[in-house]
Length: 277
Image 1 (cartoon, one colour):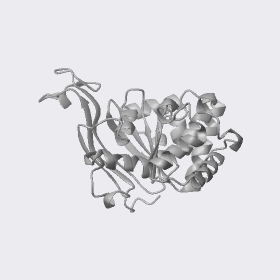
Image 2 (tube, rainbow, N blue to C red):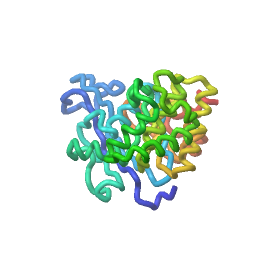
Image 3 (cartoon, rainbow, N blue to C red):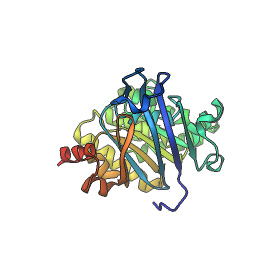
Image 4 (tube, one colour):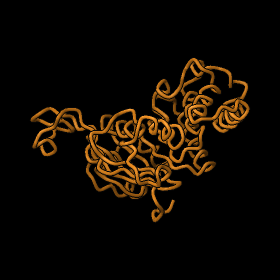
């Protein structure tokens, strides 16, 4: 990671609100809700960059806006305003939120990979593990069955799922295995950036450790940039180069992960760090 390089992803002034807003909205919020008109500011003027080969952590409590941010980036939610550009799309000169539906599908299938907290959102549970990966490859335009099988085998081996289970449906897998299939599917077309949303939440501690080790292995193997959402600072400490702290839809602190953990400046970050000690 070199911060003098061009970012892989750059987000500027992202706002996602539910409600029309009013003249005093952003100055009269109770948490992220306007006390005058009731508008909810799910993402409130969010800006950040992700650099090549970097893991950028996003940490915060439930309702802080982390998942909203991730799903907006992956076109699941439509932002109220803001700009997001990808180095691999139109040379980083086109706002991805203002592209056509076809272009958005192309970006999802070729440039970004998403791993949801709940695997139900990211996998077809009745399809085989290999078919889930093949679906992503087909969506990117390939029709070569041999290459799809080879790629599925390679990726499932990379996430430590036995090839003997390639034809088995994820609904028969444990939660940790489902997350690993999701990761392999997200990597199918060599994306420039991987979005990981609370990938260890709800898993047993031993399984969490295996998934986190896998993420480190994936980073080393593919040199991919990763946007990593977690409510757990221990996860951030293990994986993230830099960290953003979110609260009530806003970024309240950002910096190198070591700096955030050793010398937190914002009161909320201090509470998070002290809860980890």
